Length: 303
Ligand SMILES: [Zn+2]
Image 1: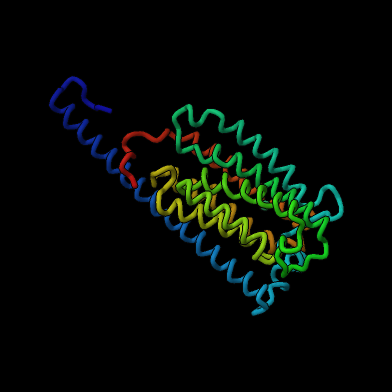
Image 2 (image 1 turned 135 degrees about the horizontal axis):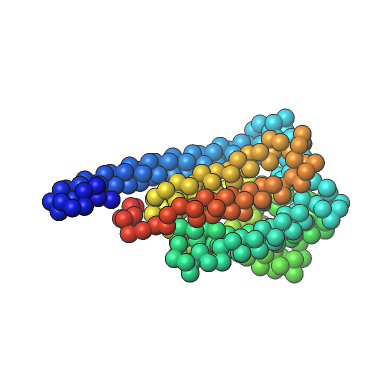
């Protein structure tokens, strides 16, 4: 750090200069990280709004997305491959999400005990990804039983009480882990939102909007939580990396699913690729973020 070690006075001056330069570099990095993270998260929220407007307008028949989003998406609201087989996209999601949850659990096994909260995002995904896959297994079973349900109808009004009860349990398990562990929501908000969204998606939301509804709620909680509170309370380089490496691929997959469905994705697993974008983004973030120096005290007042 010090260029002249035998001269005490000069050493102090040089050391002071170096410290000042380091502080200046650190401040520039913090500012750039904050701007990149804020702009990315805001852009992702804007793209979510555009997606919702496009889809709701299609369902309300203000316009048709069939020429753009394709006939497969228009029929199901998902890109579903290999129907009538045990490799149906909903089941592929269940298989791959379970495997991905196990992989992330292994990857993140020491992040908290190692004192690296900036990597906590990875472990926080584990339970949510597993129950995301379980929700897909439920959707598969439900569709097998109610194959004639029209895309504009809600799922549960015609279901048996036991089916509705199972839906409530699966729905709550789908929402709560994400809303509570992956966002800064307080417990009451996570519980209230989980109950509300389970009800709305089962009894009010048209079946074709199930994915759009669930994805929008998740993206808004994720994006707004980060914009308001940063990543684990800070807007540093890890905040920017999480926006670029974790949140952005999910949005890319959101748009790619309908746009590439008929010509490509429907032959290769369909919605499974959207599901895989979540653990893949988390894993890529982990690999990049864990290779950087850990957060330290100099970032403590960054928010
Ligand atoms: Zn999914």
